[in-house]
Length: 69
Ligand SMILES: [Zn+2]
Image (cartoon, rainbow, N blue to C red; front, side):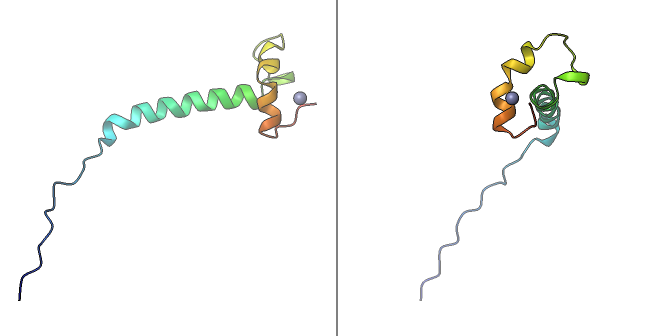
């Protein structure tokens, strides 16, 4: 009877969480800013007085089913 080969087990892959967290927080911040401009930038909550931002993201608003007009 032969003995079954035992597969070699390498070292586990290390995921550098401490290096990823600041970048993840930065990406979340950027995503929230983009979400604000796509969803809310118009009317009473507008940061800019003109409607250029609203018109620029207008198709995105309708694509994501945000109320518009
Ligand atoms: Zn619209």
